[in-house]
Amino acid sequence: MSRVRLIEPDDADTKVLESYQSLERSRGSVPNLFKALGYSGAMLGPALGVADFTGIESKIPVKEKQLAYLVASRVNHCEYCLERHSKAALKAGLGEAQIAALHQEGELAENPLFSERERLIIHFAEELTHKATATSAHIATLRPTFNDEEIVELALVISSANMFNRLANGLGIELEKDLTK
Image 1 (tube, rainbow, N blue to C red):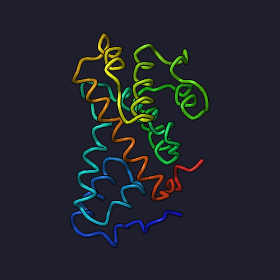
Image 2: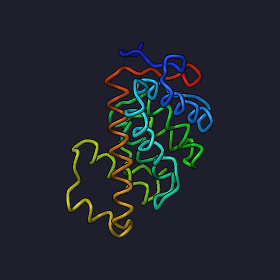
Image 3: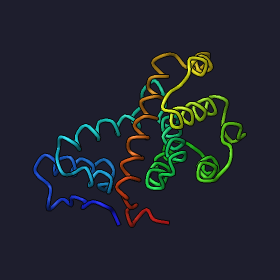
């Protein structure tokens, strides 16, 4: 059970209700994590903006952003985010075997299921999540494949995953019933 009360649509103020309706249209439901932020539009609105970036095309394809998000969630043992983003990653083009590997223990950075580019993303997500920093040497290993804008995009996705992982784990947010195994 969640450690905080989730704000259901009947209890939401007008601004939050508008956000909920938008989530219903775009995602088919309101995730429990966003219901936990539904105490005010001032919390929910910016969080949705950050969350939406992972799912839109930009310099980094959505498939690779979802991979980065899943790696951070794996490191943080965030089952809520792993399950929700596994569905999104599958839609974005990650393979079922790749997603299964992300749900298992073991080394990912050398896993042959992932391309060299994907392994660079995996290593960056692991380092940034474990250490909350990346060394100049590590950034240098990314540069032959990624430009600065792409590195910043990846850092944003990884950082947002860490934020949402901490919210979900810290508040004990449970996976929605329709997504439970």
